[in-house]
Length: 182
Image (cartoon, rainbow, N blue to C red; front, side, top):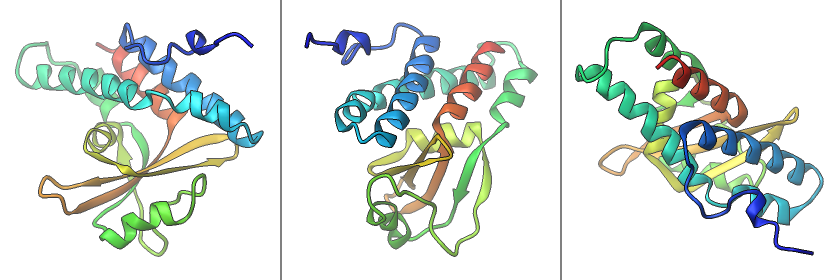
C-alpha cells in the first residue's frame, strides 16, 4: 500500500486557522471511527501532531482576545460573546489523585472525577486550560459517537488546578464561530 500520510498532512504546520480547526475536527472523526472499529493504525494517524494544531488554534484566538484588550483591534462584542459560549465541563479545585484518575480509568475510558461537582466552562477558559494542560495527563472517551477529550491543567506553581472535559468536534465548531466574528 502506498504511503498515505500526505492525506492527513502529518508533520506539517497548519496553513491557516481554518485549516487547523478543520484538521482537528477531521482527526476527531477519524479517531472515533478508528476506536469504534478497533483500528489502532487509524487512531495513531488521527492523533499525530494534534497538539501542534491545538496550539495554533488556541494561540490565534488568545492573541485576538489580547489584541482587543490592548486596543490593537477594535472592540468586538460578537467575539466576546463567542468566547463566553459553553464549551464543556470543568471540575476545580482538584487534587493530584483526581488528576491521576484520568489515566487510571484506561485509554478510551476518561471521565471527570467521580463524586465532585462539575460546572460549565466557557470557550475562553477552555482555551486557557488547553494552553496550560499537562499533556501527560489526558484521556478520552467516545460518547454516543462523539469524541470527548479529558485534560488536566496545573496552576503556574505546578499544583493541580482542574480536570476539563469537552467535545472535540463541538470545540472546533465554537472556535471557528469565534474566528468568524473577527
